[in-house]
Length: 152
Image 1 (cartoon, one colour):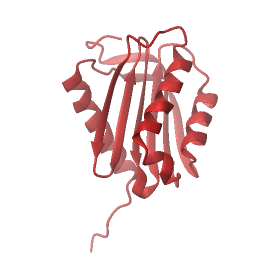
Image 2 (image 1 turned 135 degrees about the horizontal axis):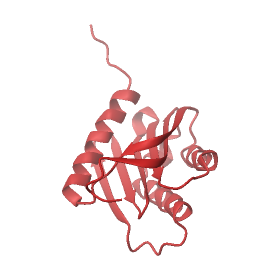
Image 3 (image 1 turned 90 degrees about the vertical axis):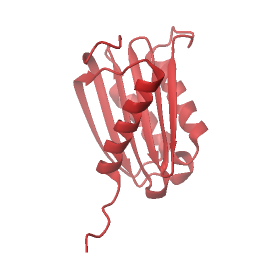
C-alpha cells in the first residue's frame, strides 16, 4: 500500500467488543503481541522488517497499529469500560472468522458487533500522519463504544 492511496480494496474486518475482561485490555504489551501474532498470520512469509508500528497511550487506554506490505491491523482498548475496537485489512482473502475468533478469545469479550467489507481508507506510512490518523480513529471508536454521560 502506498501513502497516496485514499481507498484500497481487499477484505476489511471490524469488530467492536464490549464487556471484555479488563486485564488484557489494560496491558499494552499484550495488545502489541496480539497484533504481532495476527500480522504473522496475515503475511506469514515476511520477516517483519517492513512493518510500520505506532502506539498511542491515552488516559482511557491505548491504541496500536501495525502496517504490513499488503495489510494492516488496529486495536483501540478502553479498559475501564471493558470495550475495544479492532480492525484489519488485507488485499488478499483472509479467514475472517478465525481472525475475529482469535481477537475475541484474546480479549475475552462478552458482546460484539462485527462487519466485513471490501474497501477501506488507506493508511499513511509517515510517523506523524499515522499517529494523527490513529488518534482520529481512536476518537471515533470512543464515540461508538463509550457510554454517554447524563445530559441533565
